[in-house]
Each structure stands twice: as structure tokens, then as C-alpha cells.
Length: 321
Image (tube, rainbow, N blue to C red; front, side):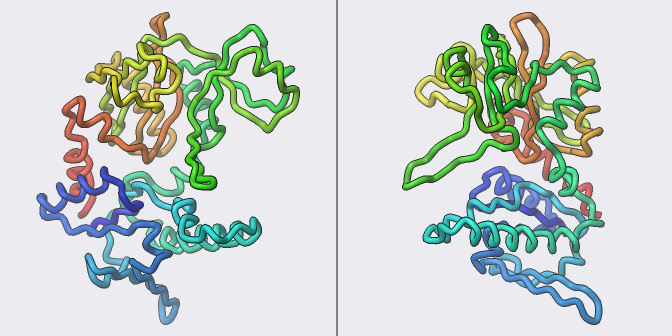
């Protein structure tokens, strides 16, 4: 049996499940949020020996020991649960609830730790943006000059920078207003206006020819070029989508040595799947930016005709033995 650990409204999960059904592979899906709203029931007993059962209206009651392999798709987003407790504003209580939330998920991981994984949870959870940059650099992949500082005196006022989250970007819902954390350019005037600030990540601004989105699956890379630099709205971060005049997206073939280095990077990080962001600079060099181990991959699959949902389904089928 295949277990998919996901989150509500993830279309990539839905499409892979459709293909698993076509292949005749028995599979179940557990959404993180459903464990805390009761849509998926869970029951743990420790005597006479440890067992974990899950149950919902879609697959009935299942003993987790019957699972052969696990796809760690998207799982463990506490902010989705917070939407159900909007009235709770006490920081200490929210911290406590998050601790209990994560500890509950850890129970699942404990029972599943020895299964076959499409992205093992331990490798995903210990991955950091800075660690990925360091590892990429060690493998001979260029990265932008990168700094983390809390004082503007450590920066070169004459250099152009971008800033982004040190960990993961998020979305905040404050008083019914949505705030997105995109990559943004930081100019000299802004840098000079603050002497001390919260520790922040800065990178040299790379003049790009185009961006690359690369989906990796078990040693194979599926690449797409994004011509985001032609639009002022998407020039710094293509995720600031221009829906009226979308960026051009085309299949892309990486040079062999770069293709091999990317596969080596994923192997060294212990990831057998994930989405990578890179830049092809106007000086002809390739620069690695970051990896999202659970990034949505339909944006690469559909424009390029890669049929990635079929590829993932076949991968899980081969693991389900």
C-alpha cells in the first residue's frame, strides 16, 4: 500500500492519485489538517505492541503497518490549522498548540520511519536554505554572493542586492489582508535608512537571461526556462505572476555537466525529488538559488509536456513492493 502525506487542495497530489488508480495501485491519502479537524481519525495503542490506525470515509480503517512506501508530499503546515482557531491570540497558547501539533505528526513519522520514502521526512526536515547553498558550492555549482546580517555596515552600499526569507517564505493573513513574502530588490537608499535590523538574508542581484525551474525525480531532471526578465512585474521574482501577460515557459536542456551536478546535489542532500530554482545569467553562467522539496510541479509539467504526474505515479508503483 502507498501512503501519501499531503495537505488539502494540493492539485499535484490529486493528479498523481488519479494515475495511481489507473495503474491499479492501492493507496491512501492523509492530509495534515484532517488529523486535527477529525476528518481523519487516528488511534495509537502501545500494548501489547505499538500500533497506529487511521480511518476516514474514503479508505475506511487502515493499520499503518500495512504501508509499503510513503510519499512525503506536503505535510505539517500549522498555519492551516490556525485558520480554525482565529479567536486564539495568546502567543504562549499558540506556541503550545503548535508543539502539540508537531508532536502528533512525529507519531506518524515514528511508525513510518523504516518504510520506503519518496523524500524521507528526516532529510526534508533537516534541510536548510543555507545548507543547500553551501553544498551546491562544494559541488562546483555557482551561487550568488550571500550574506546574513543584522547591520547595514556589513553590506556594500554600491552593490545591488535582493533579500528573501532565511528559511521558507510564507503567507500571512492579518485582519483579512493577505501578505506575501516574495524576493525583493534592496536599493542603497533602503540599506542606508536602517543601521540595525532583524537578521536578514541578502544576495547579490544577478542580471539574468532567464530563470530555470527544474523538477528532479530519482536522478532525472526535467527543466523549464522562464523568461521572467522581460516583465517588470516578474523581473525580480517570477512568482509575482502577471496573469494578463504571462511569462513565456519552454522546455530546457541543461548542459550535461550541470545536469550531473544537480543530481549529485540532490543525492548528497538525501532528496529523491524536489523543485530547484536556478538562474542563467547574462554572462552565460548558471547560478543555483534554492530547493523546494515539496514545490508544486504542474507548472513545469504542463507547459513542457513532461507528464510528471505519471512519472511520480510510476515511481510510487515501483516502490510499492
